[in-house]
Amino acid sequence: MPSLVLPRIAFLGLVGLLGLLLVHRTFQVASGSLSRIHARGLGVSPAAQGWEDQNLTALTVSPRDLATRANLLSFDTAVNKGSGLYCKCKAKWQLEFETDWTLQDELERYWSKEEYQRDDTTLVDSSVWLQEALTGLGLPYERSSNNGKDGKLEPQFWMQDKRWQTEVSVNGAVTRTEQKATFGFYISIMSPAAGLIIAENNHNPATMSGGRSPPLSKWSDVVYINWATLAKSTGNSVGNLKYLIRTHIVNPDTLNILKTVCSGPCPAWPGTSFDINQKKKSGVLINQNGLALLGTPNGGGAAWLLINHKQQLGVRKAPVSVTAWTTQGTDEIGDEEDWYHMVFQFST
Image 1 (cartoon, rainbow, N blue to C red):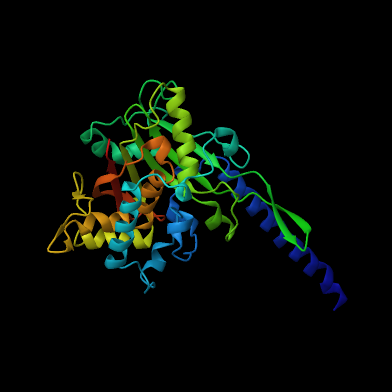
Image 2 (tube, rainbow, N blue to C red; image 1 turned 180 degrees about the vertical axis):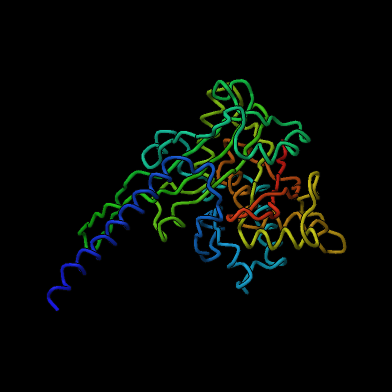
C-alpha cells in the first residue's frame, strides 16, 4: 500500500496544477478580448429581482435554464415597474435619486479602461448585426478613427480590476477588509455627436463575484461617466443623449416580455415600435407594451441612467418610444438563433 501513496500525491498535484492554469487562462481572457465573448457563454446564475435598486442590467443565465424558471417577470409586473420608472423620469429633480458618482477620477479608483480588440478595426462588434437598424435610424455604424471626434462609434471597455476596502464599525472598533477585484465589466459603444449609446456587453461586479461590489459599480454610473467624459473630449453636449440600444439581450425576464409584446418572436428590422407614456383611456393605460419593456431589467437600466443624472442629462428627459426587433445570430455551439434588441428613444 505505501507504494501507492506517491503516485496518488503526484496525480492530485497534477489536478491542482491544471486548475491553476485554467484560472490563469480565464483571467487572461477577461483582460483581453471580452468584446467578443457571448454573454450567454459565461453562465452567470440568476439573482433576485432587485434590479430596481441595484441596477443589475447584466443579469444573465444559460438558455437551458430559461425553460426551468417558473418565476419569470410577468407582463403586469413589468407594466407597473415601467410606469413607476417613467414617473421618476418625468418628475422634478430629487436629491434622493441623484448619483454620488460623476467624475472620471472616481471611476479610476475602482475600474480600468481596457483595449477594445477587434481584427477589423473599421467596425465594432455590434455594428455587424446592428448595421441595418443604425442606418435606418440615421446613426453611424463605423468605428471612429480619432477617438470619437469624427462622430463615429467609439468603444468604451471598462473592467473592475482594482481592490478596495470595506469598513465595519462595532462598538467603536473599526475592522477593514481588503476586497479582491471582481472583474466585472461594461462595454459600451458611443457617439456623443449622434446622441447614441449601445450597451454591447455587460456583466456587473455583483454577478461576477457572488454579490460583492465596489462603491461605484452601477451600470448607469459607469456608463454616464464614460459618456460625459467622451462628450466633453469631442466637443459635444452631455445632454445630447437621444438613443440607447440594448443589443443581444439574454436576460430571461426581458426576453419573456419581448415575446409577450410581440406575440411571439419579434420581427426583423424595422421591428415593432411602442410609445412610452402614461396616457389613459377609461382609466386604463393605453401604451402598456412600451411601459412593460421599460419595466424589464434591460429597460430599467435606460431609465435609471436618466433618473440618476437629471442635472447633467436633463431634468425632464424621458423615454418616448421603444422599438424591438431580432437579427439572426448563433448560440454558444454555433446553432442559429434569434438575437433580440431594443432601442429606446429619449425626449430632447
